[in-house]
Length: 393
Image (tube, rainbow, N blue to C red; front, side, top):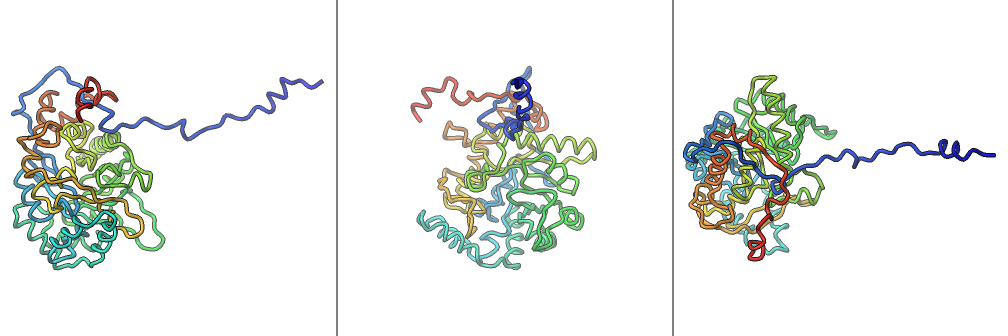
């Protein structure tokens, strides 16, 4: 007679492992809240200033290197308010003597034609004399000069920008890694690039702590965090990649702190994308960011060149766009958006006033102290007790 118990034992399948078993929870701005502690401070005593890559900032705000956001005049306007604008070296400003005509065409193109218009607009070559002219115009407007380019363009344009007075060069790509493999060309070596560049080199974007740590080891002066959270970016939909911003910022901030302890060098972390309101800016700083990079919220300013629209910088791709044109409207001067007074109650204006009030309520006098406040998982924070607001919206 066959022993059925032995048969069952002999044929019992092995333990199977699923990738889903190791999924960790991650958090975006709507998933968390900031918890008050045991002390508060006067809002007037809150200090938002810092030295960022050798550039003094009165407010922790960088304007995204997007053509609808930054031109030389906008850079000057933001500098007067204490922030820093980053110009897209591979954008409209470096391709056309009269960018206004191209920007107008993009802003007014019908929805079913805009992708073609975008692709066509970025075919014109980047011109050295225009790059030099824009750098000069930014400085003449009263701003430090920060320039962004993709890794493929950085080798050529980094030294050129440094020679023509740039103060900061940002090597920015969809996903930045410490090691890029390519069989068809010689990829940029960040370690070599930062060594021979006479100005600070910031790097973005990443969401990974280990990658950020390696970028710091290779000389990055700052690390930008965010893959796909921007309002005009469709990377998450098109490619299926990205990590919610609170988790991404906290992970990279952890790498920054570990690198500081080991090397003695502090590398600022910039939260790039996904913030529309003051509360989200406050949460980004609390998660560990030293500054925030804003795109669409600033594209709404009267000083922005986009005429009430914005588009992701991967949108002009003729084969696989990873951005779209969005209509953000023009709501008033840049000063109202950043410093108030606000004319709306949704937190989209007076962003720095909101950050200052949040820090004061949490007992944080400096940005570094704000990075130490408690963050709680609070999925109901946006809906608890808000039924009347939801009915009226």
